[in-house]
Image 1 (tube, one colour):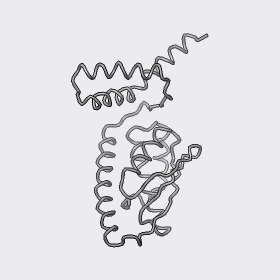
Image 2 (cartoon, one colour; image 1 turned 135 degrees about the vertical axis):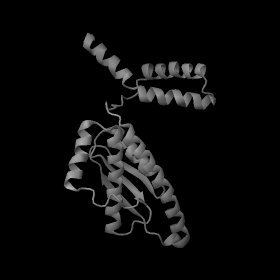
Image 3 (cartoon, one colour; image 1 turned 60 degrees about the horizontal axis):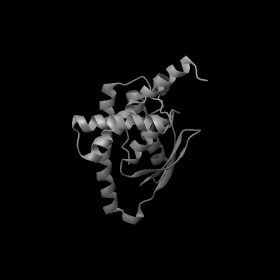
Image 4 (cartoon, helix red, strand yellow; image 1 turned 90 degrees about the vertical axis):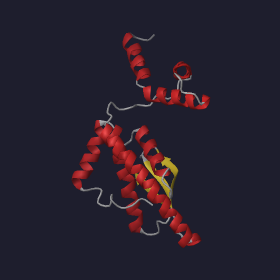
Length: 198
């Protein structure tokens, strides 16, 4: 038998999924290629029914959203996409099959599933890297990286990946994860974060 507090928690848990609700609604509009108010309203109803009846796993969104750092992350991400695209094209032309690739393990600070997922996607969408495995208990990403052929390059990539995670945490991460990033910065744990992501 459920209690009143359980119902309250359930309601709060449902409405805390608003980013998923928004994403499903926009997906509905994209599928119909129509973003008129009527279609979006139908999308909201369909999305609410989906979240209510299909019991999707709850995603714990933090109560933080920093617009400035979100914009910083967006600009940074687009910059990496452009520069990495040019770098990969140049390496393909000049080195071809001689390029040496590596699998790099990146232990992340956060154990939040959303942060780990967003970090993995952000890294995979940059040309030259691909997530091939995720160790959830240790929050470790394993990435296949192009033209990473020595220990220095591996550390440079790992530092850049941690910098990407830090940018996401600053934008939407929990206060606990933000504290971990600030603690690492205070210790100087990202000395190579300025290096280019390949």
